[in-house]
Amino acid sequence: MTWIDDLAVRADATLTDYVAAYYHSAAGDGSCAREGIEDWASMRLRPSVLRDSTHLRTEVDLLGTRVSSPIVVAPMAQQVAARPEGEVLTARGAAAQGALLGVSTNTGVSFTDIDAEGAPWWYQVYVAKDRSITQRLVERAVAAGARALVLTVDTTALTVENAEIDPRYWVDEKLKFRTGNLSPAEVEAAGAGLGMALDLTPDTIGWLAEISGVPVLAKGVLTARDARRCVDAGAEAVIVSTHGGRRLGNSVTSAYALPEVVAEVGGEVEVHVDSGIRSGQHAVAALAMGARAVHVGRPVMWGLAADGAEGVANVLARYRLELETTIRQMGLASVLDLFPVDVVKRR
Image (cartoon, rainbow, N blue to C red):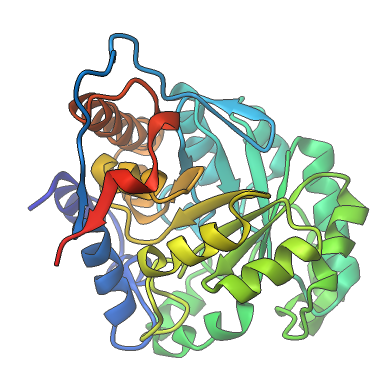
């Protein structure tokens, strides 16, 4: 077992069985989720020699925000099921490590409480059928301190997996749809308008940029053609993502898709990646392939469930230590010294 496998076991022991199953769940038969991890594990690095690596640097700028390393906490819904304080504890753990985090539309805690922990954060947007609700949430997030918006661009497929979730999940009072950023009266008045919109177009990117005044990232991009459409529509970064295999059961993996997206738009905008990155070594491979940052989801959630804010900090620290060790072993001095020639896929 890896340390993450062990952490998942400890986390599962603290959770009700159906919540644990939700955190592990994947689309279809789980092929994309499994292969996502396997593809990163198949990458092999090419070390350099006779390079001065005395002073190691892992700091990077992500859309103008300086962070301690390119390891970012991915936005994840239902963190209150892991710990009642949810993203407040996640933000506390991220702040302790100088990391940035994403905050889901479906967070159950308030934006101001998250921001008070001191970690820089981006607001992940599921566009609602009633656009006025989304605008209200975006404006509140930005007013509270969100530095960018992460638009999930592939929401249609995300609804499919929910049919397989244990029905107890939906009747647990802690897990019903909730938000710490709309009043009960606003939720009641919105009704069906809270559902996710299925009619998104590239124009949605420009609309979000206009109403927020902050950069917009497009998350869920797996092809060069869609990366181009998003960037041409105003996205300042794209995130190559299968949502941890929760988008389409037999989808290509993020490791497979990353090179073509980097080739298409990497010279113009930041390209980030997530899904299946289970170690600092995997992160180094992704950075060498052209990613500016890697986003980590389930391991952080398991750290939160098992050990609260300290667990989140420990997960991020472990990833960073593995990343630093790998960079040193490659004979390099900075994450910015990584290039595509430094990584190959094992045959």
